[in-house]
Amino acid sequence: MPYLPTIVLAAAGLLLLVVLLVRTTRVLRGFKQTASMVATNTQDRAGLIRARAAGLRVAFAQRRRKPENQ
Image (cartoon, rainbow, N blue to C red; front, side, top):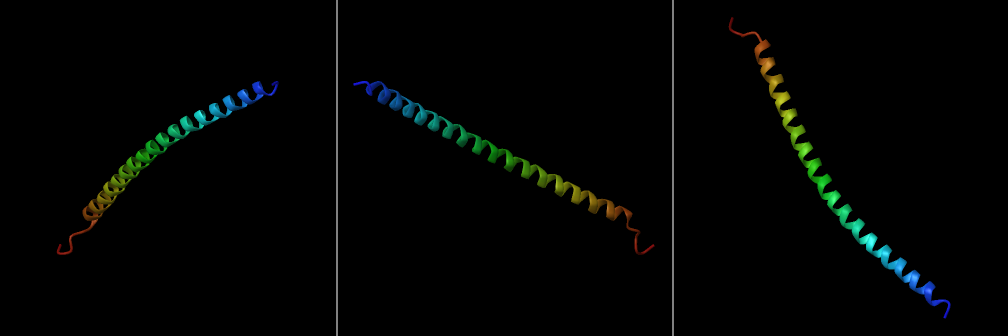
């Protein structure tokens, strides 16, 4: 039975591989959720900044405009 240690080592290696794949999948799933939250937050903040900039452009344009009746 000299092949028994080889089979045991191969089985242990496969078990270790499965455990590592499961843990890696969990970590990647958590990373994906975190990255999604960060992207959403960044897009929201960028939208607010764009809206503020547009509001400032309108306000400046209104101040520069000469009154029509004077």
